Structure formats: C-alpha cells, structure tokens
Image 1 (cartoon, rainbow, N blue to C red):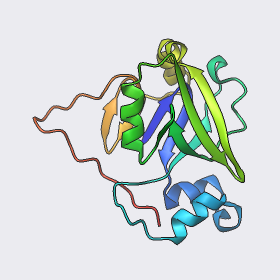
Image 2: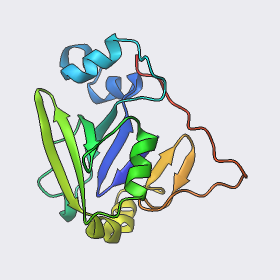
Image 3: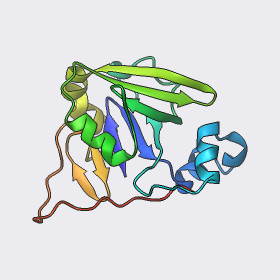
Image 4: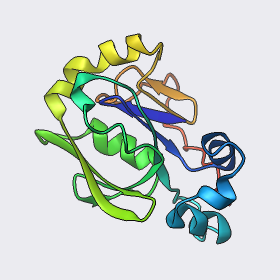
Length: 166
C-alpha cells in the first residue's frame, strides 16, 4: 500500500515499516507522533498515520531529501486521515501546487511544495526510473497515475483494507 507523487513515497505507518525503516531500533528512534500511535489503541479504524517513507531523487523534489520518515499532517491545508483519503485528494486536486505539511522528529509544520503540473508531467519518468509499475496501490487497487483514480473491474467499489497501527 503506497502512493508515489512527485517522487515522494507515502505509506501508512505499520509495524513492518517501522522495523525496516529504523533497522529494529524503532522503539528508541521513533518520532513522538509515531510513538504515540503505536502506544495507544486506534479508536477509529478508518484513521491511520501516513508517513513520507522516501524521497526518490528527481529535479522536481530537489531540496526535500532530508524529509524521509516524516508523518504527513495535511495535504493542501486539509487534514490527512488515511492513505486512501490522501490518494483521493491527490487525484482530485485542481490547485497549481501540491503542499504537504509534515512533522519530522520534533520539527512540526514543515512544508513540501511541488508544482502539480510538473508532478504530472514527470510522473511516468520517475516511476520508470525507479522501476515502479503503479503510482498508487491502495489495498491491491493500482492506479497507473497518482493523478487519476484507479479503475475497478467489478461493479461495486471496494472497501479499502486498513492495516491497524499498534
């Protein structure tokens, strides 16, 4: 389950991701918001923390490579509640710019701002460069572009599966 937009790789916060990202030392190295998420039971099963897992090197995201492992607070000023909601927000975005507000370690409120048009024009190049087939994969439903919704072959849209954060 992931979203790639402008070379930013966004994923839900899960225990396997934390173990991989922090090489088994996640309990000592996790930022406060991530620590809180795993210590408290999630009351609303539709909510999950979205993490900027990696920044894939490309001219359009130059200067944002020190932002990995940040939690995503908002997209274009709207709070993010889960990855599926973020995918939808990106796909329906009509603004000239894409702006993520992220929290990195103890530094909250940092912003990543990318040109929507440049992201769209460079998307296939970024995906191809890094060997990524789909720009978004949420609960097994792939989208070739982060900017267009995935198509489903069955009549009813799926219920998006969620991996609980604990």
